[in-house]
Length: 358
Image 1 (tube, rainbow, N blue to C red):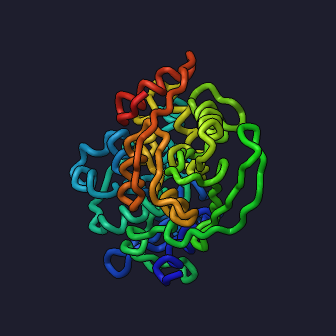
Image 2 (image 1 turned 45 degrees about the vertical axis):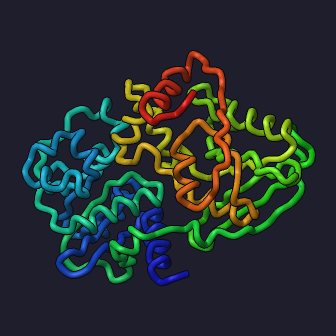
Image 3 (image 1 turned 30 degrees about the horizontal axis):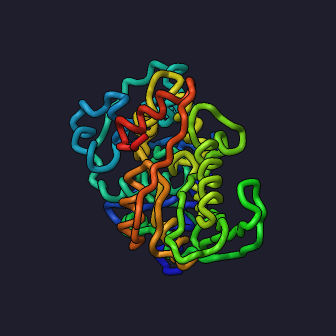
């Protein structure tokens, strides 16, 4: 593992534990504490003099109407927005600023002012670091000397971080499943992140490109049978289709909620209950419409010795992502699932706003 990757791994671990991190150096240095992972004691340790600002994503700043202030307007679209501390900007208020799913219960916020943020690249990198850690992209930020034990990262190391290149096969075994008894499970692990992806190899190679399905983990749909999405039926139908054809690979990617993680997915659900679709919910949380990294899937296929595949998908982003990573898509096979009254709007959003063919 290179030193830059070690930096990012230490930074992710620190954020999840509620410890401060430093991004950048010199005049462009940002000393940060995740708002989501903070509590009263951690905040007091972080800012013993009680002085701290708040760093928000540009999407969240726009939702809060902070982008009509000059300092914020100069930052939106480039990185983040720094909100100046006022007496009422305590932990509870900062948490409400960070989490849009709480907007209905905390409708009145402010007034707030923004300040110039010269460290645009460092702030953007900090937001990416939070997303890599599965946390809301929102921080307490302060000036002055950073804590001596805080991990210090460069914006470049965060920007260029890629864990897929260090993914390796960790274990494999026979696993008879309902769809097909002749199935092998293969587990993959990277030295750079505590996430384990798996593949189900259905049948055996027969000279044809395998039918491949990229399935992102969905606890609510795969395990609990949620009707809000089509993930569970997609998983079952994919395995049945591969068993019928006699040869296929299902890649089960640990990228819950299109890469934003389970907790943030549930926050997105709360926003959907308020009337936002899946796209707007993710954006209001400060995440990309789709934050998944399909280079992980490409690496898994490479390790399985499969560079030419038939891809079972309705999602053009999966085709583009695998192709960009060097996988030859011999054919895109449609994957049609019947809608229900609870997920019809969700499916329509995928069709109308993310280009899925349904």
